[in-house]
Length: 571
Image 1 (cartoon, one colour):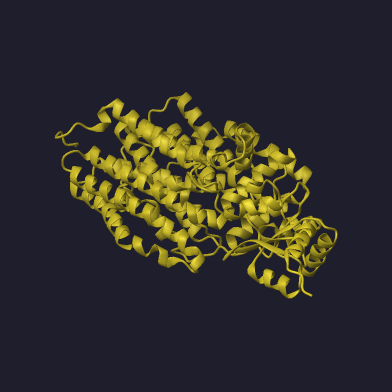
Image 2 (image 1 turned 30 degrees about the vertical axis):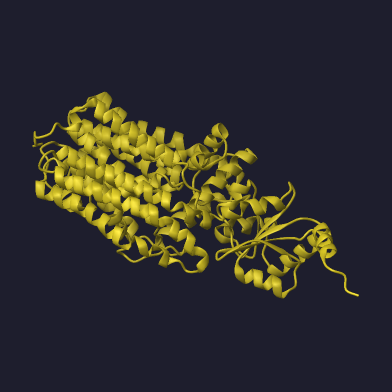
């Protein structure tokens, strides 16, 4: 029971509104506070930009080349945002940011209906401040959209199957579940319904509640599911007969069962990411999972469903042949509800331990922040790492203060303690993100934008030789011509070979011809290609260089004449 030494902030609507408004102000501000970082952010922004530019909302393209790896929902939403608000960083992240908020709202509302107002508030605090959820809500990648839609499916199931739900609530909940699975499928593919379906099977086996299958409103649900998903798949198949095999076979079965994408990892790959991602609630995680195993009094075992959702999805991606850090993101809303349920029952010592972990993270960060610049691999990179140091100190201090206040307030006011930890972690994490932006600009190559744009006219070709820049095309508002290195567009250039130059020697010939004709051209190179161009005596001028890339342009004849005119005459 909450101590009465101090009034609970949960009892004050004004306080709750102030917290919510402050949270949203920071959340939306951070959508545009950073550069779009390669690879995902630049890729999905550019794909949506090309969708708007071409007017083709059926066939997805990257760099002008057919790109069939994923369904279109995120590209549609980003393209819609660009159409309404123009091109920019916050516009590219708006759908992702909204999906993060959808997940928090859905999880909190579901907790309210199942467990009451206090647990609903704690669910919102836990999920909104969890490092992974708050971070991925500000990164333009597919996994937050997938996670939000899967959260709708999970919450729809919980709401529809809960004890005491009226026939109308059961129907609406299940239709939300089916719609969530459909939208998840349109976000990232078949896992949008395969994973929820597998969890449902495991749940009915564990609880022996086989009657649940009779309460799924399956006919209406399937009609809704196919109405959302089928039209695009038919249209893209009609426009691109090669799409079904690549999408269903290569991108699903081969991706899961092999390392075809070279994104493998050990079986424990996701454990460190879970530990980092659930901060600042790490000290409560194991207790919350263990408590959910106990049998509940009601027919529908909601906590077991949440536990199975978290454990199975984590296990599924752990055994997959393809692993990326964001794959386990869908489990965090379920974990947030379980942790929120357990907060009400934990001892003061457990809460002190949890707050102490956040404070300890702050202390460790303060001790090691000065060493960040030493991570640079070259002198060129030192300023970018050094720029992170003040922000890292600020983030560590915020985390330390949040942890200390959470520790102090435990015995006086449990709710104030939880709130202190949540605010400290949330603000600290966002400050870390701001500090990373100087490195993000370097990774994206935007420091070279002015020099590149000075060389460009409307018909100036840009070549990407030996590397593909994921963010620069979006900022330059134009595609590049791939040379030698197809990157992730290997399937696309295989069916559209006229859109790239497979051999470096052919590019050299093209470059010389453009120079002879007095035309402009720009090329993004890796350092090995640049050296090869030097060795072959190709005419070029360096307009940008850093450890990741060399950017060259064809020197113009007028510039060469001016250079020669400035040279002293020798007699």
